[in-house]
Amino acid sequence: MTVQVRFRQHPLLWFAILALGLSWWAWPLYGLGLLPVPVASFGPFLAALTVLAVTEGWSGVVGLFRRMGRWRVGLVWYLLALGTPLFISAVAVLLNLALGAQAHLVTLDLDWMSILSTFAAVLLIPGFGGAWEEPGWRGYALPRLQSGRTALRAALTLGVLVAGWHLPLTMVGQVSWVDMIQIIGAVIVFNWLFNNTGGSVLIIMLAHAANNTVWKTLTSKVVDEPDFLRQAVLQTVLWCVTAVVVVLAAGPAHLSRRHHRQEESPALPRRSEHVVPVAAGRS
Image (tube, rainbow, N blue to C red):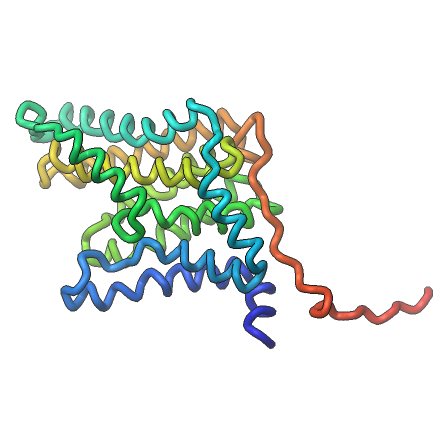
């Protein structure tokens, strides 16, 4: 059986295997002190490109890039993509302060050029931040997971995969176990954005970049390290509450009241690969 046939039979399985393999190769190098993180965040993107190239050829690869460039989605979705991570983090910080956390609000020096440059780097440079995971998770996996499944069930499946992908970061202490739950809640919210913007990967990359930027340039500087765990717990609760609100408001079937969930059927074998059925006898 050829590689192409194997990939066509189980494209999502091969995507998951490649997404882990093309990301976790960095783990040993991190252990040797050669890399700052134990995962290559662009691994899911490379996995998507590989599976698409094998199963669908150039048309599949072009389709992924079109999703990544889909920008005509309405101003409100840009505001939600950029504002939701900031709002959730800000509310979590305020709750943390109310519970006794030590903060540096007075001495916080907001360097807007640093914030904007961090955001641009996370968004545009593969491997610098998590935004380049999204062409794989949302651009490839989600439309196929939503084929024949409710959007909520697809989101929970994808959430487990994305959380599991972060395992090396958890093992080395860069991501807490609480964050793994937060990821599942965020996946549901991100999928809601995706389904309501006609499958725009760009919107999700912006949301992911915004979330990473808020943490790197604001939250981690406001809250003292001893209170990081409580901050993670509060943010996890808020992401999960937001996810519940999204499901109740938009419905579990499509995570949208106006749009059908984004679906994409697996590539069919080429005509030469079809097995000719044996004619059945008349009854």
